[in-house]
Image (cartoon, rainbow, N blue to C red; front, side, top):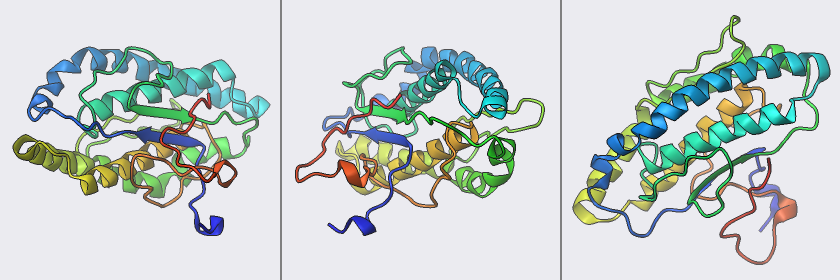
Length: 243
């Protein structure tokens, strides 16, 4: 394979494995099952906003994102992705998400963000509202009723899925699953690509990286890996211990 034609890896990695055996009807009640997680995530996202404000000033003064704050925010994104993957952002597994900010290498949905050793002090002033605007339009299509609130008062943001193209495709996949017992692979790959795009934008707008999100759908369960990580063998579960 020509590495020049390979997509460049992004500092945030969103990966998952589609469960081979999914219940036909469990997805109809997952909205009820995830209520404890939703309650936890409400408080975690409030903390995410507060932490992001603190990180904003830390980066502005020192050019670095405090590691403890960074790890916490990665954990919130990780928790959000696991719950979304179990429920209505993907319906990719029937395995109940763990209540933890830490990485769970055995769970079929994983997220990690590479810790930046240095961040631009100037970009921190504009990337979360000005530079990310084109991506907000895309995210609005993907996530529908998503909320991306970035304002001068909070210097932070939040994201919650509320339908859109992701929700529509997941609904179609759920109906197909209900009648056939199979999750359409094409829909799954597309849903993964859109979720990956959304989380990249969230990480960028939350000041966790200076790498501008690509206007690219990296579809499928596996995120592009750096060229230096390529080998002759397959990578069924790349290492995600990045934070």
